[in-house]
Length: 151
Figure 1 (cartoon, one colour):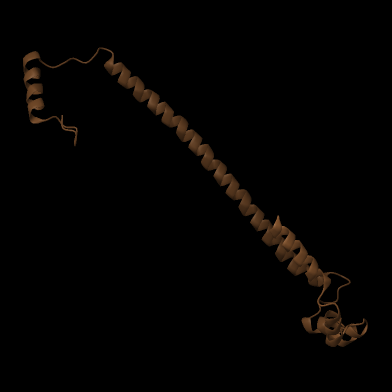
Figure 2 (cartoon, one colour; figure 1 turned 45 degrees about the horizontal axis):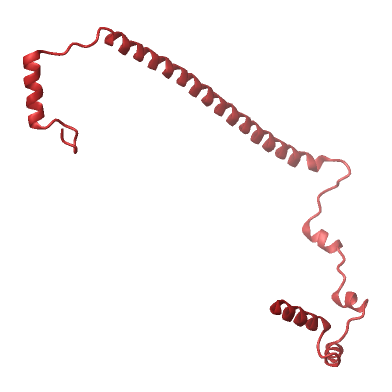
């Protein structure tokens, strides 16, 4: 038998033909037909069960999609209802515009906020660092780093 295509070689085919001609055809087992028909029936039953399961899954997907659509529809309907009803609510004459809100808002100027607390000048900060040869935390960092390296 050829390994490439799994066909019989010419010599093997000739041997098979000679064997069939000498001995005749081989008969199938007596129960072969009933086994094949049983397998076909089992396969068809299996397909029916699988199709019912697929149908149930499809129905579940349709139900989930329908629920999703109803939620979206409800959300849209609620938004439209709110848009329509807000102008008619008592106690609210109208919704103010952006310009009106900005005009009513009082903004405290920066100078007023800065003047409330003492802010050191640049020269004061520089003089302080010159007196101490730099902030104290730099020395702490240097000591920590040198101890870390020496470990």
